[in-house]
Amino acid sequence: MYMDIKSRDNEKFKYLKSLLKKKNRMREEKYMVEGYRIIKQAIETGEKLHMAVFSESFEKNEFCESVLSELENQGTKVYRLDQKLFDEISDTQNSQGIIAVAHMKSLDLKEQVGKGTRFVLVLDRIQDPGNMGTIIRTADAAGVEAVVLLKGCVDVYNPKVLRSTMGSVFTMPILSADDSESALDILKEEGFAVASSILETDSYYDEISYPQKIALVIGNEANGIDQSIIERSDIKVKIPIYGNAESLNAGIAAGILMYKIAGVLYCIKK
Image (cartoon, rainbow, N blue to C red):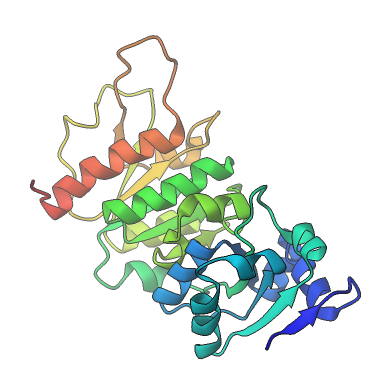
């Protein structure tokens, strides 16, 4: 039997609703993930979930019993939430009826890149949630070993970002660095070449040699990479535009470059 939450005055409901705001997420170092699939992925990757709530409609789901049992088996407290209250904290129009609270990971950049890491992605002021999530998911697929978010990036724990990662938020080390200068200093000290994707260069991405330790920088959707980062870059590349478009979407550009570098680092063969 599960304890029911039926009142807005319930402390657990108030707590869940507070996590809709970034400042509260950061203070509590916790965030909400919504949907059966992403929660299942969290469980499978060993993520220890703080608590979970499900709606009355979720009980009709064929996966209900198994996923609730898995949550309880790992020590997660599970509650049944009144449908109207569930809708207040749900971020999707067609919710799957289950939400869990996960713990943020505290990672140190120097420690993360100093243990044999060869491929790091640095995101400079990526602000679109869909782009951010897609880039993280693609980075996970392309063998990127850590993602560094510089100041000005959208909150990675934004519900739209989390959905777009399709669970990669649990497997990809994601670090925040408010000071881009310090972040670049650490990467360079650890032997990384910094490669920036910019339009103002004669070097095409598929015509140069990439070193065995590389930090790829992808910049803001509208303004590109900050000039201070460009000036400290060891490699500057661009993707050719054959048609009339002015530029590529940041997520698409990141995918092209990541897979090119992955092919060099990991000798991917079909």
